Image 1 (cartoon, one colour):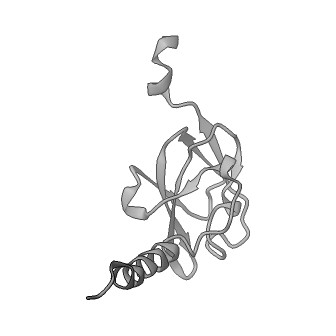
Image 2: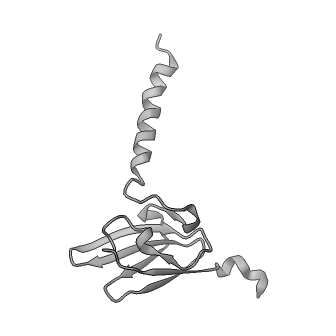
Image 3: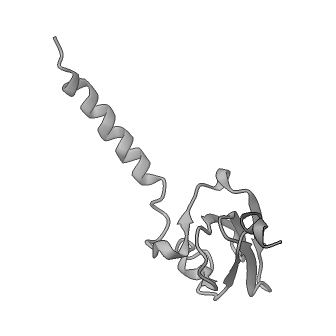
Length: 118
């Protein structure tokens, strides 16, 4: 009889190894700046081109950034689960996407979360 540990252990090790790869291309960041997310969970898309200097986002918003570069388009996604503002996107984007450009994200409070103020 095969013990359950010998059967389950390889499955668990494989699952943890795969999940670790999911965010491997994102830099380590301060959790006060937000959280990297998968592109398919974003609810808003913002395109960044050579003229972009800042973007406006809401607290708790999940944003997919499409960055137009000389070498084509690159993408990254971020959840702004923070009220810190402004945030420099070059500190959030995977290395090389913004080519050391300084683009600020201004985070505004979620208007749905502050309905009692109306």
